Image (tube, rainbow, N blue to C red; front, side, top):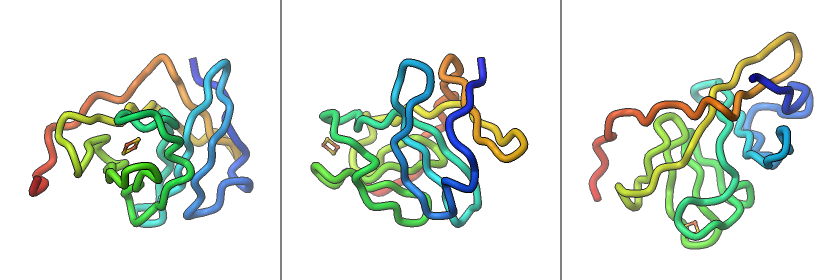
Length: 115
Ligand code: FES
């Protein structure tokens, strides 16, 4: 079931936010290039650090704890091919961003990183 997370005017391009969604907290990323929203778990799948404290570079988030780099488009970790960041279906409805935490996005085919 889709639930409102945030008004779009609170999440300009380049934003990285931790927001409640139902009973969970999620990370919301407003990517600049490509211009799109990504909603994911806010805790790093490596050791649980808060990814919203990390650095957003293009469509990658770099974890503040051990600097693992996650591709927000695919969910894959550039630093460790076993780590996957769980992302969720989201959509813009009017001036709001909504997400369905019951619908994790499928894992994309492995990206071709040089590990
Ligand atoms: S907790 Fe994120 S890279 Fe270790």
